[in-house]
Length: 319
Image (tube, rainbow, N blue to C red; front, side):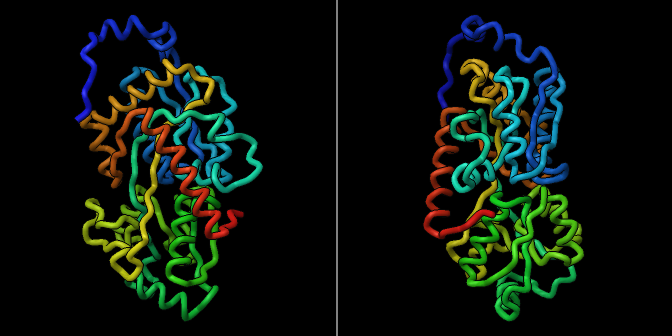
């Protein structure tokens, strides 16, 4: 249990600079680096709606898809640090920082983590007419037809891309990577079978599986996921070491004042505790990732280092 300070709220308010006390005095822009309907977009829009209600100000979602979320991340990094431009990002931000050279910005130097929101496994889906009914059958088909199967991602270097590469490496198969500009356009080709499989985010993949529009073969967590209890893990289907998680959270330009950044982080924490927020996120199969800003900063930099070590050890080329 976290021990909260007993300093009266009015004393905390007096200690905050005027800009933090008055924030937000106008609409806030939330940049999301993926297409509308993608997993990160779905979660980001839930949070934008709930933060808007909490702040009594509009939070305008702006989708800037492309380059594995780096188009939006660069725009956020180069925005004024006044709190009126925020970034809602996911693992791809850390993966790019670790593995993509010559980016026009630095996630480590130009952005500051504010608050985490979710950490959820991916769900491996195929079209409903694809013959494989489980992971073993998918692997067997890939081995029987080397280089003919394909897998989708929401962009080179994103979490779903790395899920696919890790799966291929551990299963000893070869499949062609087909990157898209978000999860929503990716599934449009997976459902009819134009692309073989996709490690979708839960908000995209789980509703498709539940409706029968796609078939779920496995989840990427070590234990079965509560929102999909009948879907076996990939680990229990012959790849015991397989595990991957999609995390999402808020970032701001590094020039934001520490006080204002801390204020926004606390507001996100507050909103995540609200029953309506939790219910809305649960509806799309999201598991919450609740922590304070200091720990999220440590987590983000540790995640960059984890991906840096993985890319180096596997000689993976993200291009």
